[in-house]
Image (cartoon, rainbow, N blue to C red; front, side, top):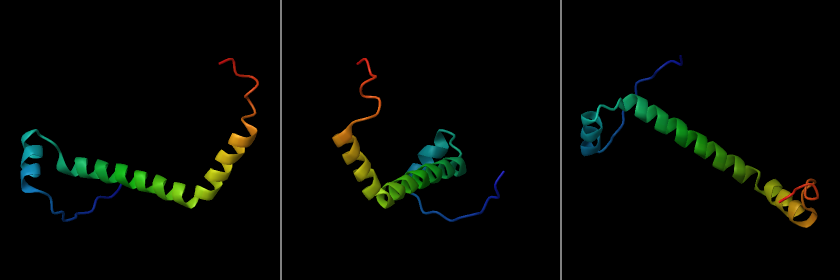
Length: 74
């Protein structure tokens, strides 16, 4: 298990009250949200860094097709 660190967050009071009322573990919810958002940002940055290669690949497929084009039955 990874080490935990204490942080301070500012979150809407009503939202916290609602979350507690339904029994949510705020730390677990925050951790999962940060994990998902971090992964999404990593993916966005990867796509940005590789944009030229992705565009070149798309152009190649558009011009030459896929190696399997003659094999597909649909």
